[in-house]
Image (tube, rainbow, N blue to C red; front, side):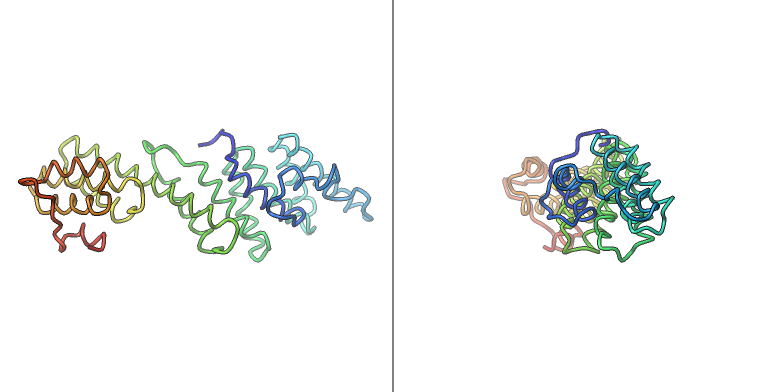
Length: 290
């Protein structure tokens, strides 16, 4: 997922978070005005009284200028200079979170996570803490691999997204985090389906059934569930466990009556034109509250 254009919806959330960090502007403000205010006014005036303040202004504004040019890695370095050289300045706190944002924009997601995690550790009560958690979650999400590879990164992304929703349910980031969590769950379910189909293809029906069982018990809201129920029907029929096959097909028909997977399952288990009937004592029926 790395090295791609940022989606409009996500950029809206990022712009909103950045606005809060820089100027506490409204969430709908666009990214350019968030960075520079009206016109080319810098975030920090160069005419501050103390020499240290002037140096902070120079470094911080240089970071913003580099961001405006799209030089996000250089921007992150300038914000890092603020943090290192002036650790007790209020702008060092903002600069740390700006590092995370800059690295995220540069697709350097591990660096973004590191910066945001430092912010979370050092400033757990900060007004922008929800944004820091959200940026960690987005950075984890962008590192999700395709389903043919190890899914530990997908699980890490799911955990981070759910943490945003759990810790900050009323924040402007919660809804987006929940949506991305659904997609991450679908990804994990897809991996289980891939492995299950492999086992079925090689005649290891119980191993395949266990993978499909994981889908319908742990990822029941995913788009993979209809096929998982069909594959359970298929696997149990291959083992001669007709009652469980009937139940899987009946549950599939009850929940997804118009699915093509139900049509195939029906053909596998129907007797004398009768629709499959669920055994209510089956784990499949109980998993769906039947």
